[in-house]
Length: 279
Image (tube, rainbow, N blue to C red; front, side):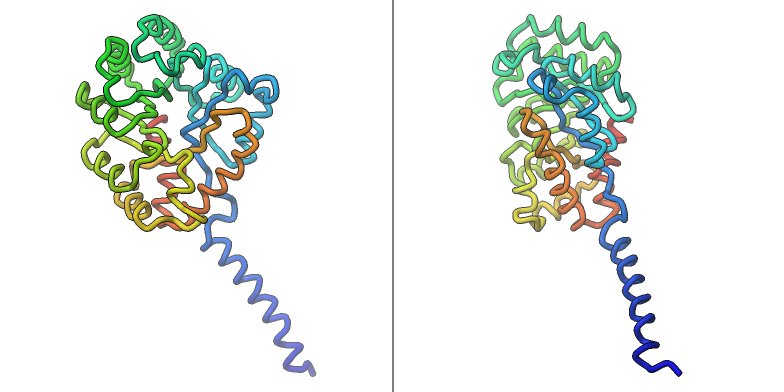
């Protein structure tokens, strides 16, 4: 006859297995939440150390199902897209070289570059570009806005709050992804712009420490993400070559704060919202 301890042992083992399985399904997914990263660059300094196959491997291993990619110059984006068109969503940076960053918005010679690259017919948007309040009223910006409306493209703007408002004042029909949620804007300011402009989306690249300091999601950011669950986008940002090694950790941080949201909200921010923008 088996002792009570002998009977209990397999039952306890079975219970442990069942609890572990339940924890795997309740605490997230058995496999990591897929990510549509809306802020990736593959610019010229990356190309020698990180050929396209290596980049695609990094994205795949990090669970990045799709990525919004812009590069300086655009050749990097096109090379990745040709290798993996299902994963890579091209958008067009207006920069021919990094020297264009501070002056592109008032340099009419940039327009020939933009229009020639858009003629490839693969780009879903224009950006990520740097543009700040008081810089939007130039012929270059007005032409970029015309092209966005003509070709149903969105703009990916690394901008302050003033420039975002100015862009929508020029053309209310614009669709804009606000890079880095303004970089330093808090949840109250971000929420006010989302309330005001229904075709504004916000990417959270480089904001992990603000959104979830120490890994715990900030209550104000959490409330805003729930209130505007359809308008937030996941992102990391590989603006310098060293960021490719940091990318897996950045993605893990994103998943950490997403796990603290209702599952339907987490899935929208992780990939569903971006999928609707770039079907």
